[in-house]
Structures are given as structure tokens and as C-alpha cells.
Length: 68
Image (cartoon, rainbow, N blue to C red):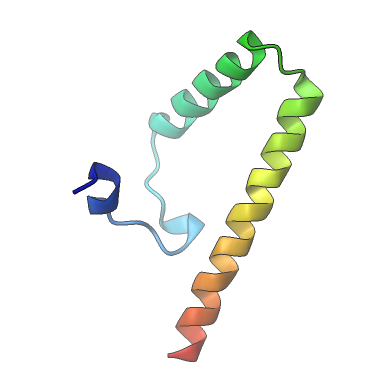
């Protein structure tokens, strides 16, 4: 089984674990993108799209909770 599938996923953003892992991952991703020629504006556009996708995904979770 996939290791990621075994991890309990938080239902709300506020349920996500707090720690440096998120900071380290974000910094690594940013450096990787910059190292591959992405401009700060392109990274910002990518980030906005990711926030939009996560927001939509959490909306589905909320709707599923209210339906039950």
C-alpha cells in the first residue's frame, strides 16, 4: 500500500500538524522552481492555483459533512 495513503489526512486546514516540515518543503519547492527557470510571478500564479484547488477540495469535505 502507498505510504501516503496510510497517513490520516486532516479534514480541515486547522487540523494539519504544525511544524517545520511545511516550511522546509515550501522552501525546497521554491528553490527547485527558481533553479529550473520559473520567475517569481510564475511561482505566485502556481501558488494561487494551488490555494484555489485546496479551497475547492475543502469545500467538498464541508459539503460531505453537512449532508451526513
